[in-house]
Length: 142
Figure 1: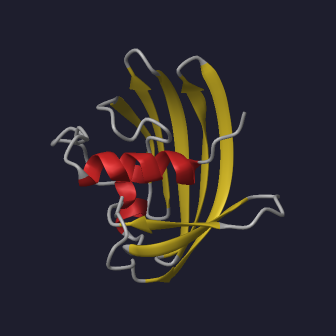
Figure 2: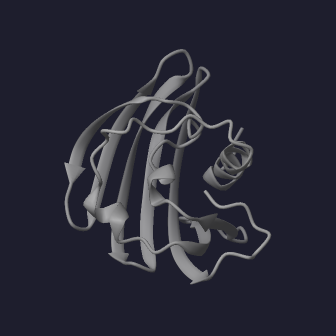
């Protein structure tokens, strides 16, 4: 069963829009690579797939780190915090864990690799992303 990051982030966005999401710890350091990602509408294509790309409105690139666990407060361990690469391992008590790497080519192009366990089921996803414009006025931001 493959449920992509877009669907999981979209669900988290609905929770965030309704004020139900738990924010990341206030003392979490800023990841340099994520700070370069421009807010807006993004097209995410599954690496190596001929499937049509999905779109996602990103207001805060930090939401990309906790794949599938976006609405939970998880413990994070930063493995890499470089200008163009962020790698974070996270553990979410009771629901699983994961590790995500975001490699930023430009503020309008990045790749995302993520893997882990969600509610006992493994996942592994790789995406290529490019910014395609501003978020729609009625779109939920993540």
